[in-house]
Image (cartoon, rainbow, N blue to C red; front, side):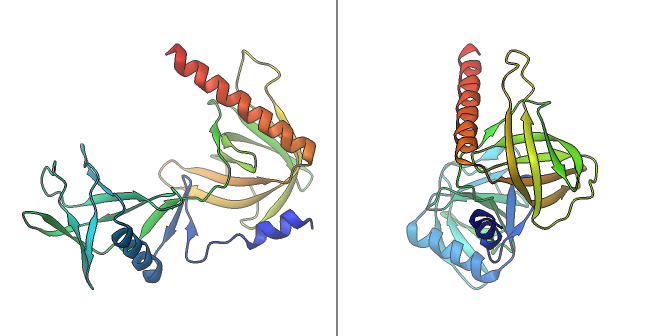
Length: 244
């Protein structure tokens, strides 16, 4: 096993569980209290939202044993039964939770303490989306597998399928990885990596889709090719944006 493969197995965030759509979830009281405490101490801006409404930035003013107190946004439009509270930590990782408002005063909203907090999966490398219809193939246990691909970075990619493939939930080695974006205007826009691993598997019940997180173990030459691939895709996205 290579050094990068050994390091990968150690990268498990204690207290967080992988969910679908690129999120992690915690129900740890200690982690939730720590996150809320930091919000209060650092006076980090948060936003409140519900159907048809999103507030201006506000702050968490107080934490009690049963709830927390938030400064009422200047544009507050009423009290819905449930709201979403969103914020980013010091590392700019997006977090959110859902809770209920227990009472309101002239200047404050009193909320129930959240029992769950979600965050976007920590990614040390910038990812770019690929066009609908893009695919990825690889060899697993002597079998060639084909998946749709959602996004890619220098360290890996997110792939998905509606078929329940017989692939382990645990770290699984794969080989001969090929990325084939759906781009008619550029037939050479493709990528190959010799070795990688599936490091997570989640299921989106609502859309009935299986998601798989793939980590690359590229050679130096392959790593350079991946970066060129990503830059090329970024330029393509920018050009399309300018045309619009």
